[in-house]
Each structure stands twice: as structure tokens, then as C-alpha cells.
Length: 626
Image 1 (cartoon, rainbow, N blue to C red):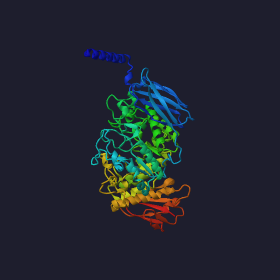
Image 2 (cartoon, rainbow, N blue to C red):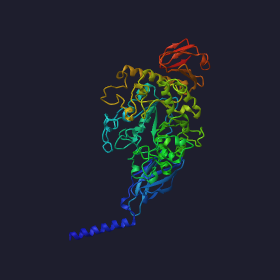
Image 3 (cartoon, rainbow, N blue to C red):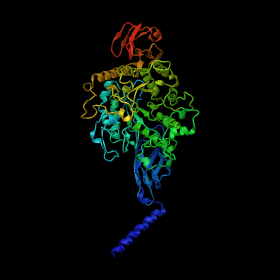
Image 4 (tube, rainbow, N blue to C red):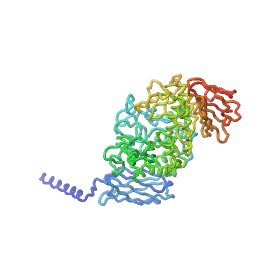
């Protein structure tokens, strides 16, 4: 009798399952995992919003919503039945509030998501923009300071080890650690903080850098939470500091939840066999380039662990653009740095920039362009200045070519196109930019050898380079640790990503304090602080006109002059040779005017005799004109 009952029940179950399989409805398996963006904002310039919906067989649903001012325009089904893309239109006068989005499959329980529209934050302190009045401090949160030991290891994540002795594992630095050192930034004269990406990178190994996103709407739990990030921006603003967010259009991490269940095959760029980008920028701009070379540059994957977005896919475009707009509005970010800019689809990036700037007119945007010539850098900037045929809408770039010219000026010999002449020649090509003052200038970062090592740990050259960084046109960026002479060559990159000493409890030394630094490190730190704080109060160095003179007798001279005549002009003299030089100043009459004396802003020494100036070997003098 018992066996008969079991057989009867099993037959009923089998028949039911066969019915489901036959009809193809899979009703019992329907599930709603997530909707992104998880909430949005009223009063946006663009009334259109596309929601990405993910859930098992969610495409079998009938979708409905009702909220005054919100219209469900279209429900888009794609290759993968686990996705729907909902096109919404939000009227300009729509009120903030919550409403259900319902997913119904006939004969099953309805699934519902409570969607929220929030008011935009229009406070004046938000989204200030970053300009040539600012100085950027660039850091890697995992390697800067550990402010919350409880999030060092998150057991639910792929990488379950923290090991500060390895350059590849997590070290435990976090957002709270950065917040704990706001006073350090301010004392040094920094006005802006830029961190490598803070969003989730849930990869098994070596994802501490942040450029392998696995969840675009979530701060990595080892750094903090979304709420903490928003607090970080708010407290930075309260401390007179601005915030730049580092974002990646080009690629994601291999363990990204979307890559694990692609909405459609062409969400990423597909190749018959794995194809890596050539890392060559030339095919993008070369009028003689083959289509194959250009495709490899733009569509090739950055590395095997970073799937390359197909930015021609309209769903991909909406997903990325909305994500960036969401973060800016949610947190009140002042600027964006765009990673691997040259490898992106140019038409999409121009459209992206238009949409972002329409929502946030004061936002600052600059792209990473590690290229080898001024025309190549200008090619990517806005204005279609050099006959590209496309306005990229990109205001500024990371000025790698100027960095290389400074290396040559400090380390090279003065020949016709080398040494000081490389620097002079590079700046003479500024006419190619719509506005070179929007370029971010830097001498090192997380992807290249540290500046102190590049100048062979020559302290005079280091000091000379710092003087140039804070007095040239553009927005200066200082890489963390440069102020305390951190060194190493980037082979591999981990060697230039060491922990900041003192950022962890129990560190042998604390170089956030003068007591923890050596005399030479204090001299370096004080030099940076002196220059940065002087620049904060000098309209000439911030936005003044730059006038340079052809190098002569091993010396290069330029002036920064206040355009409105409200501030004192500055004269900069670089002697890159190993001997003391005497500079005759009669040649600079047009810039010096009726100057009667000068003050060395680093040493404080006053120069009452200025017809000739003695310039020590391997030195950059920064002189205020009286």
C-alpha cells in the first residue's frame, strides 16, 4: 500500500514537471535578483531611464507599474531570458516617492520591486569641479591607510587572504583610512583627493587596484559601503577638499556578475580566439591605419581577466552612462578620471560626455592618455582642434608627454631637441589644445616608476622637479608617497604601490608625522607643502598666463603672470647642469616690467639685485616679483 502511494505521488510530480518542460514556461523557476540602477532621481535633464532587470526567466513576465509622471515606454527582451530592459520616461514635474514594479507570470505569485525616485541634491557645496586652482593627491586606498580592521577580510568574497608582505594581495587600506588623514592632506596644501576605483572587485587575486569591477553599483566591502563613500565625499567637502572618482568604461572583471550571465553575446567584444589590445594608440588616429589594427586597439581585451565592453551596444551604453550619472548624483563627486581612454569607442565616449555634462555642468572630466606626442594627446581632447572630424567632448587629459619632457629636462643633456629643449618644445605645442590648463600634470602614478627613482634618487633633481610641478600650467597631481621620497621602478607595478608607512597600527614608523620622517624626508615634505600652499594663494600660478623663453646657457626660464594684475607674477628658472650658472635678466624685460626685487618663495630670501641671478646646479628657482 505504501509503495502504491509513493508511486502515485511520484507519477503526479513527474507529469507536472513534464508539463512545465513541454510548455517551456518554467514558472516555478522565475526569480527577481536585482534592478539597476536600484533607485533614480527626479529633475534630471534627460527624462529617459533604462532599468536593467535580472532574474531567472524574468523575460516571461508581464511588467506593470503606475506612478504619476512615470511612463513605462517599452519592455525590451534580449537573447538571455534572465534579463529585461525597461524603458521609462520621467516627467519633469514628477515628485519623489516610491512605487512598485510588478512582474507577473500567469498562474504564479507576482514578483514586485519597490522602486524609488529621490530628489536631486542642489546644495551649492556639491559637484564643485576641479580646476587649475586645485592640487590633486592621488592614492590607492588599499595601500594608503587601514581605518577599519573589521573589513580587512570578507569571508563571502573570492580573495580570503590579506597579506601585506605580498604586492598582489589585499593589504587592508580603506576609505575610513583616507578619511582619518584629511588633516594631513590639508596641511600639505592638497585640495583634491583622487583614489583608484573603490567599487567592488571580487576577483580571486590581485584586484586591490580596483580596475576589475564585479559590481558597478557597490563599493567594495573591504573599502567600506556605499553609505560610507557618500559620507567620505560629504566630509571631504566639509574639510575644504574635493573628490575625484576613477571610473572605467573599457572593461570589467572576469567575475563580474553580468559577465557570468551575459544579457547577450555581444555585451562584450567577442573574438574567435582571445585577442589582447595592441596598446598602440596610433591606429586610432592614423589616416593610413588598417581597420584590423584599429579594431585590435579598441576592441581587444586589456588583459585576459578584463572582458572588454562592446560600447557600440546601446544597452551597454545606457548601463555604463547611467551608472556614472548615478554615482555623481548619489555622492556629489567633483570630478571623474576616465581610465584607458584611448581604447574606448570614440562615438560613444562623446555621447557619454554630452549626457554627463548636461546633468552636471560644473563636473570636471579628464581622460588617461598614456601616448607619446602632443598631437596624440590633443587628438583625444574636445573641440575637434586638429581635424579629427569628431568632438570628443573631453575637456582634459593626463599629460604624459609633459611628464616625459620633464624627465628629459632633468636627466638629459642639452642638445638641439633634447634636455631643456624637449620641455620647451613640448609646451610650445599647447596651441593644439582647446585649453591646456585643463590637463592634469604629474610626474608619476600607480602604473609607472616613482619620480624619485626616475631621477636616480638625486635629491636636487627631485626638488627641482617638485618646483616645476607646482608652477607649470595645468592641474598638478601628486602621487601618494612622493612627498616622503618613496621610490621604486614599476617592474612589476606592485613595487610602486607600497603601503604608506604609518597607515597601519603597529607600523614601525609613522610618516604622516614629522617625528616619524627622516630629516631628508621632512625636507621633501616641507618643500611640497611650501609650494602647494603658496600655489593655493597665487592667482599667477593657478591661472596666470605662461610665458616661456628659448633655453640658453643651460637654463630654461618661464613666467606665470596674473591675467588680471591682482596677484604677483612668478619667475621660474631651471638650471639642469652640474654647475652654478649666472642668469642675465635683461632678456626678460617684457615679463619683468618694473620689477625692483624678488623673493625666493622656497627659502624666503629676498633678492634686491636682480640684473643677474645666481642659479645653483640642478636647481629650479621660484621667484616672486615685487
